Image (cartoon, rainbow, N blue to C red; front, side, top):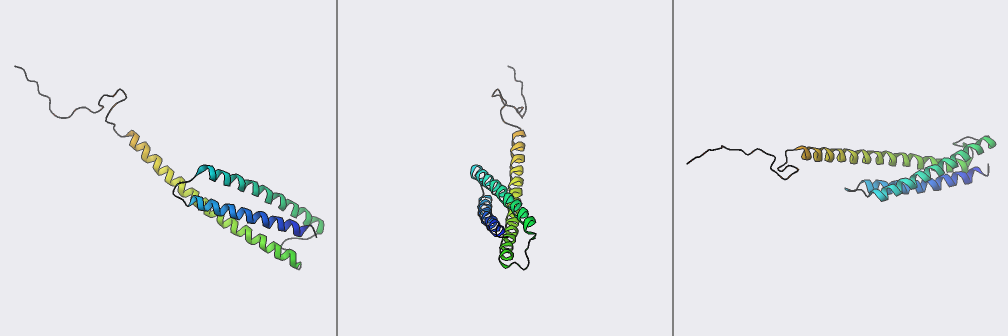
Length: 147
Protein backbone atom coordinates (compact mmCIF):
# COMPACT_ATOMS: atom_id res chain seq x y z
CA UNK A 1 0.00 0.00 0.00
CA UNK A 2 2.90 2.37 0.75
CA UNK A 3 4.23 1.92 -2.84
CA UNK A 4 0.92 2.90 -4.39
CA UNK A 5 0.97 6.55 -3.28
CA UNK A 6 4.40 7.34 -4.84
CA UNK A 7 3.24 5.71 -8.09
CA UNK A 8 0.12 7.89 -8.15
CA UNK A 9 2.27 10.93 -7.39
CA UNK A 10 4.56 10.11 -10.32
CA UNK A 11 1.53 9.63 -12.56
CA UNK A 12 0.19 13.05 -11.55
CA UNK A 13 3.58 14.68 -12.15
CA UNK A 14 3.78 13.10 -15.62
CA UNK A 15 0.22 14.18 -16.36
CA UNK A 16 1.12 17.74 -15.31
CA UNK A 17 3.99 17.69 -17.82
CA UNK A 18 1.69 16.24 -20.49
CA UNK A 19 -0.84 18.97 -19.84
CA UNK A 20 1.83 21.66 -20.29
CA UNK A 21 2.95 20.11 -23.59
CA UNK A 22 -0.61 19.86 -24.84
CA UNK A 23 -1.31 23.49 -23.95
CA UNK A 24 1.75 24.50 -25.96
CA UNK A 25 0.56 22.27 -28.80
CA UNK A 26 -2.83 24.03 -28.78
CA UNK A 27 -1.09 27.42 -28.76
CA UNK A 28 1.02 26.46 -31.77
CA UNK A 29 -1.96 25.07 -33.67
CA UNK A 30 -3.91 28.28 -33.00
CA UNK A 31 -1.34 30.23 -35.01
CA UNK A 32 -1.98 31.01 -38.65
CA UNK A 33 1.26 29.31 -39.68
CA UNK A 34 2.57 26.19 -37.97
CA UNK A 35 6.23 25.57 -37.23
CA UNK A 36 6.49 21.85 -38.14
CA UNK A 37 9.81 21.31 -36.36
CA UNK A 38 8.64 22.57 -32.98
CA UNK A 39 5.33 20.74 -33.42
CA UNK A 40 7.26 17.51 -34.07
CA UNK A 41 9.36 18.08 -30.94
CA UNK A 42 6.15 18.50 -28.93
CA UNK A 43 4.69 15.34 -30.47
CA UNK A 44 7.85 13.37 -29.59
CA UNK A 45 7.79 14.67 -26.00
CA UNK A 46 4.10 13.86 -25.74
CA UNK A 47 4.68 10.34 -27.00
CA UNK A 48 7.47 9.81 -24.48
CA UNK A 49 5.28 11.07 -21.63
CA UNK A 50 2.42 8.83 -22.68
CA UNK A 51 4.78 5.86 -22.52
CA UNK A 52 5.90 6.95 -19.05
CA UNK A 53 2.30 7.29 -17.89
CA UNK A 54 1.52 3.84 -19.27
CA UNK A 55 4.48 2.43 -17.35
CA UNK A 56 3.27 3.99 -14.08
CA UNK A 57 -0.26 2.80 -14.74
CA UNK A 58 1.02 -0.76 -15.22
CA UNK A 59 2.95 -0.45 -11.93
CA UNK A 60 -0.20 0.87 -10.24
CA UNK A 61 -2.23 -2.11 -11.43
CA UNK A 62 0.43 -4.53 -10.16
CA UNK A 63 0.45 -2.86 -6.75
CA UNK A 64 -3.35 -2.93 -6.65
CA UNK A 65 -3.26 -6.68 -7.18
CA UNK A 66 -0.66 -7.13 -4.43
CA UNK A 67 -2.54 -4.89 -1.98
CA UNK A 68 -5.97 -6.08 -3.06
CA UNK A 69 -7.03 -2.48 -3.54
CA UNK A 70 -8.84 -0.90 -6.43
CA UNK A 71 -9.17 2.65 -7.71
CA UNK A 72 -10.74 5.02 -6.67
CA UNK A 73 -9.61 3.67 -3.26
CA UNK A 74 -12.69 4.44 -1.16
CA UNK A 75 -11.92 4.74 2.53
CA UNK A 76 -8.20 5.32 1.91
CA UNK A 77 -8.07 9.12 2.26
CA UNK A 78 -4.61 9.86 0.90
CA UNK A 79 -4.89 7.43 -2.01
CA UNK A 80 -8.46 8.52 -2.75
CA UNK A 81 -7.42 12.20 -2.96
CA UNK A 82 -4.43 11.35 -5.12
CA UNK A 83 -6.58 9.27 -7.45
CA UNK A 84 -9.07 12.14 -7.76
CA UNK A 85 -6.23 14.44 -8.84
CA UNK A 86 -5.00 11.91 -11.40
CA UNK A 87 -8.54 11.46 -12.74
CA UNK A 88 -9.03 15.21 -13.07
CA UNK A 89 -5.73 15.55 -14.96
CA UNK A 90 -6.78 12.74 -17.30
CA UNK A 91 -10.13 14.46 -18.01
CA UNK A 92 -8.39 17.77 -18.71
CA UNK A 93 -5.83 16.07 -20.96
CA UNK A 94 -8.64 14.39 -22.88
CA UNK A 95 -10.32 17.77 -23.44
CA UNK A 96 -7.03 19.26 -24.63
CA UNK A 97 -6.51 16.30 -26.95
CA UNK A 98 -9.94 16.86 -28.50
CA UNK A 99 -9.06 20.52 -29.00
CA UNK A 100 -5.77 19.51 -30.69
CA UNK A 101 -7.67 17.12 -32.96
CA UNK A 102 -10.13 19.85 -33.93
CA UNK A 103 -7.34 22.32 -34.70
CA UNK A 104 -5.45 19.73 -36.77
CA UNK A 105 -8.62 18.96 -38.76
CA UNK A 106 -9.05 22.68 -39.39
CA UNK A 107 -5.47 23.04 -40.66
CA UNK A 108 -5.86 19.96 -42.86
CA UNK A 109 -9.04 21.38 -44.46
CA UNK A 110 -7.31 24.70 -45.05
CA UNK A 111 -4.37 22.91 -46.69
CA UNK A 112 -6.72 20.90 -48.91
CA UNK A 113 -8.44 24.10 -50.08
CA UNK A 114 -5.08 25.70 -50.84
CA UNK A 115 -3.93 22.60 -52.71
CA UNK A 116 -7.10 22.60 -54.84
CA UNK A 117 -6.66 26.29 -55.63
CA UNK A 118 -3.06 25.71 -56.69
CA UNK A 119 -4.01 22.73 -58.85
CA UNK A 120 -6.79 24.71 -60.53
CA UNK A 121 -4.46 27.65 -61.14
CA UNK A 122 -1.90 25.30 -62.65
CA UNK A 123 -4.45 23.75 -65.02
CA UNK A 124 -5.84 27.05 -66.23
CA UNK A 125 -4.79 28.12 -69.72
CA UNK A 126 -1.33 29.54 -69.51
CA UNK A 127 -0.13 32.36 -71.72
CA UNK A 128 3.01 30.64 -72.94
CA UNK A 129 3.88 27.05 -73.68
CA UNK A 130 7.01 25.19 -72.54
CA UNK A 131 9.02 26.42 -75.57
CA UNK A 132 8.07 30.03 -74.91
CA UNK A 133 5.54 30.33 -77.74
CA UNK A 134 2.08 31.67 -77.21
CA UNK A 135 -0.27 28.86 -76.38
CA UNK A 136 -3.41 30.75 -77.32
CA UNK A 137 -4.49 31.03 -80.88
CA UNK A 138 -4.53 34.61 -82.01
CA UNK A 139 -7.97 36.10 -82.07
CA UNK A 140 -9.33 38.48 -84.66
CA UNK A 141 -9.62 38.44 -88.42
CA UNK A 142 -6.97 37.48 -90.88
CA UNK A 143 -6.64 39.64 -93.94
CA UNK A 144 -4.88 38.66 -97.10
CA UNK A 145 -3.88 41.75 -98.95
CA UNK A 146 -2.07 41.56 -102.21
CA UNK A 147 -0.91 44.44 -104.38
